[in-house]
Length: 483
Image 1 (cartoon, helix red, strand yellow):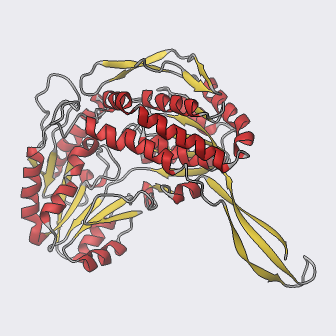
Image 2: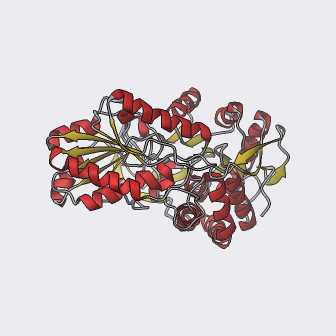
Image 3: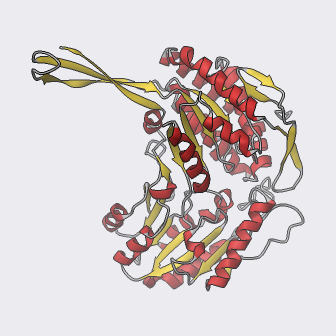
């Protein structure tokens, strides 16, 4: 399969003004392929193309848009093999993860938003009292969902299939047009998605993709006067900057930002289940996921046993080539990010944490690997417990009672997803309701794909997934008439 080497603008494959740069396989350090480097002018041209296409697309029948999304889902499913290989090469995710959670989820998201949803609903008639608007009358009303307009989608590097699909599919379903700015580390998969959408019959300009390492390109697709909304997944620092730019023109934003998920393990918890859930931080995307339960809060009655079991679990995880079927933990995305994660482990040592396991670089000749690492005897004021590390590193903090555990969980700049493990479900739900987070997992790290997703505090603004994504990419309009 040849690598995409051109931008996708206005339905055409366009040569990039800035030439190309190399996408590197984080497992082998080999070059996966050349990625196009757009200029800011080309980024603005993509936004203009989306603006021109918006009127006709927004007036297209929802059933017609749904049919195109369904064809896109089938196209992605049919390319599952080569798409999975590309995702593994770009991200370092294991083959099983790339197939199921990247390409497979992307196809499922396009299929889900191929369902036509009601875009309007009746409002109970009200009596309008006599006044400036005229004599008393019964007024009927209808609430209608209108598309937000041109949406810039800035996507994350950890999942170049599911994350863009989670933005593009509901945005298109609601009648928006989009400009996708993929993460510079792994944009090739997003161009493959654009090919699938083009083959499915998406009209020119409805979907545009521009990539590049330049900050100026990202700023151009956010600041363009043709853009009505920005949907961003990434760091809180970048999200803050995007919000500042959008605020100048009151552009709508949807922000899914950082996380430092608290995992409260109560003294009546099933420790095997808790360890299996928390252990996904070591394995799933090698900890490069904002929803990971990275900050474990363990009640003292189970603290020692939990630390011991987590350490044993981490030591058993095979680290290596993500293409090998026995591998569970692959590399992180780049040498720069590996160094960053390792620097946090060293910082934890200096802060007084005990490195129970990990902390060393796996003995591999090539690739950007970090060993699953467990830091115990931590306190919640340590930087390793407060800042998002985004790697296979788990910290453990002891607490005495529920009140202290809830207080520690809330003592964070973030509030994306927290977790509670308890053998008493009523107790777990009582604690869950006290947590200040956009989502709470009770005895699970799984997610319901129709439940709203988003964070409190610096973890983001807005909610998506399921019908909530259709709400996120639309505006509510009321139409009132005499009854």
